[in-house]
Length: 327
Image 1 (cartoon, helix red, strand yellow):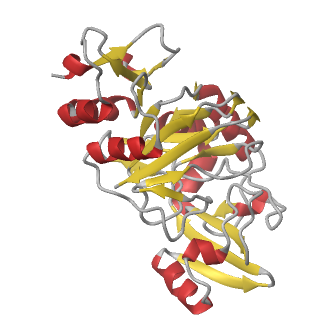
Image 2 (image 1 turned 90 degrees about the horizontal axis):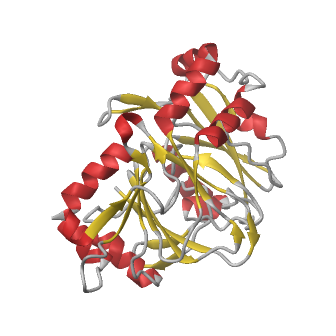
């Protein structure tokens, strides 16, 4: 039984948000203090998979706090214990990551002082992970919080605020343009080079792999324009029977090759988005999000269809958060 090894924290641990029907976001699970022996997270997950799946379905996010998970290897064991199939972070991903062990990668390696905007993982790819695990190996000094927000809430708020835009987005879809350099740019959250993105230094092979991902490459001096779409600006969450805000409208990355972030997202007919949409979307995301102050050994499980995530700038080093992706 779930209560034998895990207990759900409702008050006192952190200020969770209330979702529909009184469900908390995120749901927080801790070792049952009534058990004399130490509760191993891997064993607790194996024993309660169906219950945990139901919690994730209800809330979209489950935080495991207070368990002895101290290393990348421990975290890999936790991911394996879930029974979820591996989703390799490979061709097409925008963020720079390094494989650590097994199914574990570094989280986005963008400079710690930069903000990483809200996004669904690999939302621009035809296939994306369904679930994400994050693990705090080194607790941040100050800043570096991970923010999460329910995607259907953002869809509903944006439809209230910008009904005409949402209607046009649903009709036309969205086109994305990414500029990839010859070499990776460690100063950018989306700084993978085209060679790293497509895992080849052969332009013909890169074009073949891009085509399979629904991308078109236009070679320019020093790099390549990657054209993606048109793609829907939303997705329909079949499990929960609702529309979710599955797009990059609130992005706005600016780096050496992308000096005008507004050109990164357009309507499917290549007309520009209204000027105020992106800024309004970012404000709504901030207003509605839950901000997670990481503690060492925290493990966060997200439903990638239901929840957007972001990273606040790190003010005081160090910080080390690892990630794993599941089908």
